[in-house]
Amino acid sequence: MTHMLTEDRPIEGDTRDRLLEAGLRLFAARGFDSVSTRELTRAAGVNIAAIGYHFGGKEELYLAVIQRQVEETEPLVGPATRRLVQAVRAARGDRDTLARIAAGFVTEMLRAFLGNERMRLRAAVVLREYAKPSQAFTILFKGRMESLHKAVTELAAAAIGRDPEEPESVIRAHAIMGQIIIFFIARVVLWARLGCEDYDAETLERIERELTASVLASLGLPQVKAAGGGS
Image (cartoon, rainbow, N blue to C red; front, side, top):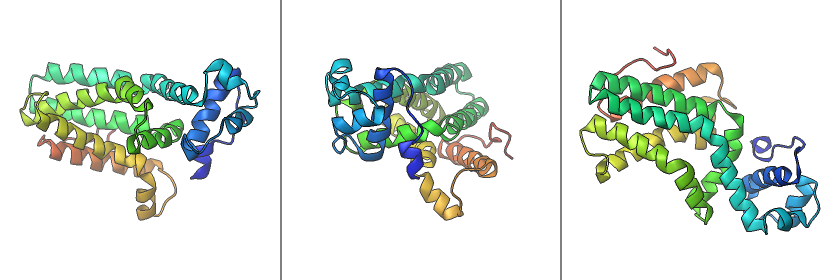
């Protein structure tokens, strides 16, 4: 949906913040190469020299936009990542406990990704980096995805009885991540299949219930209710 990518609301803040916001909106909508410095400054409502003054150039602005997304998502993803690692280690292999941990993590990630409108804007930028990595990918990977992926790998390894460093554990974790993220990055496919234009409360409850069951099954863990209360 176009308005979710461009966010036509007025841009507020100081010059640097306005450029970062304009960069996020335009890079999300059209990608790095298709956006000119003139368009960026016009969208931000600032002088043409502002990009050079505050960032050095368009590429540096783009890197700053990516870094800002890492920082802004920390309160959503960082604590959940740390809790997951601590809980898995404390479970000491108990499969019922691991099942409850996995269910709770699925709920937390769904709410972080699907319940946050701004995440949809960020997703467009991130997906471009996944499809065609640039220097910014390292910022995304080191700043956000590596720690999250490693945390899920600990869960996967504990569930399948392998060492977290084994490739099989990493691959299984990647599969788990894919099951969650697909509801975010390919939401329009599901909307088309369900005949809706967005996620409503009832659909989100169904997703949480079915995704929890799918993740637990893929890890060979006992089935439990979705952490949000779905039956």
